[in-house]
Structures are given as C-alpha cells and as structure tokens.
Image 1 (cartoon, rainbow, N blue to C red):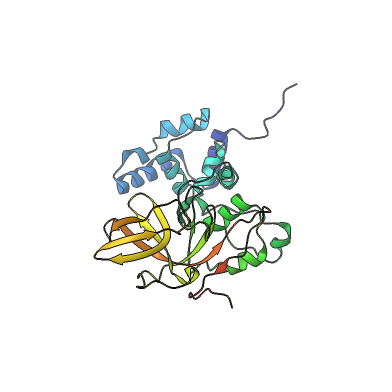
Image 2 (tube, one colour):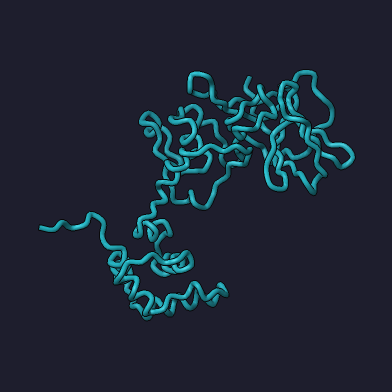
Length: 276
C-alpha cells in the first residue's frame, strides 16, 4: 500500500495557484512577455510549453522566471520558492552556523522582508515588532534577547553595525562580536582629543571593500582610524572621502559578557544615547 507525499508536487501547486487566480497558460505567457519587455531581458519570459513542462514535471525554474511567477500570481517570491523546497524562513536559523570575521553594517536586507523571528516566550506578549536584520542577527548570535534590550533599539533613526570577530581595533573598550548603534546624522569628525578614552567619539567608517569602527582623526584630507593603545591593530590612514567615508557616530554598544549573556545597549558618553 502506497503513501501519499506530505508535500504536494511543486508543479501541481503551481497549477493550482495559477487556476486560483483565474489565469490560463497562454495568459501567463502574455503577462511574462510584458515583464520581459519592461526589463529588457528575455529570461523573464515564460512560454506556454515551458509552463506546461514545469507543471507536469516539477523542475525548479530559474531566478528570473521565479520573479515573473511571483509577479503574475501575486505571491511573494519566498512562497514560490517554498514549492520547490527552498525555505527562506530558515535563513535566520542557518545563519547561526557562521560567524563574521569582518566588521560590517547590519541593515535591513531585502531577504528579511518576509522573515519572522521567534522571540523568547517572555517577550512575545510584550514585544512583537516586525523582523529586521539587526533583531534577527541578535537572536542568531546571542540567543534569547531580553525585552529591555529590544525596547532600547531605535530602528527608525539609527543604524546598527556588527564588530567582526577578528576586529580588535577598540579592544578592550569594544569587544569583537559586539553590536553598535550608529547615529547617521553625526558624520563630521570632531577635532581634539578628550582626556578620557570613553569621551572620545567613536565612528563607524565605510571603506572601499570593508568597514571599520574606531576613533577617528581628520587632517589634510587623510582620515586616520585610531585603535586603542592595547589593541594589536595599527593606525590605518585613508584618503577622505575617496577611500573612507564616515557612516555615523557610534552612540551605543551591546557586548557579550563572560557568562554567555550580554550587556544592555549602553549609551556612550557625550552622545544623545548616553544614560545618566
């Protein structure tokens, strides 16, 4: 006695979806031609014979035809891909398999548009924002995120950066693997050196192929990224703004601590995010 598959045939699912929106195979072909012409790329075109073959055999379409199917059937790309076994909802989980050696910005990427985060049970009743790359990454790297930390994140006005696991520029002030909050409105390097290291402005810097986070000095068109005195990293100098551009000033930091937890997003001295 045979068993029915728990997952419907992908071709059958596409056929059911097409019929649910009231389209014939010829109409799909016509609409895909419009997309191909508007994009100036024939790869978006879905011929009636091609669609018949896909609905019959269930072979996975290429990315351009996936796009056309998503537009024509009025469904998200993630849903169409799921018919063929690609689960975008697994992205957050799969990212936990990896660390990132380089310092980089943590921004809202397009692939997180349809992602959802599984928050700790205690957080769900109090805080259910839509997923963002930062919140997803916090959950991935650190596990359960306290509601108190989530409430501090200014997702509309601030940017967030991840300090690479091999970035010791400001060690031990900011540890590798930390998250930093960035104010993109503060892009001018303040002159002078503060007596206390924690009073010195810290900046997040975009380089040609990477990012840096550190104290900065700007003189004669040269931007210097200055490390902590105890850091093994040397001073790095770049032509400004051709080789290095200030993304913004770091206004807060959340760092993993020894027992496996992590600190709150603490405001830095002299910034709008400073805590009393």
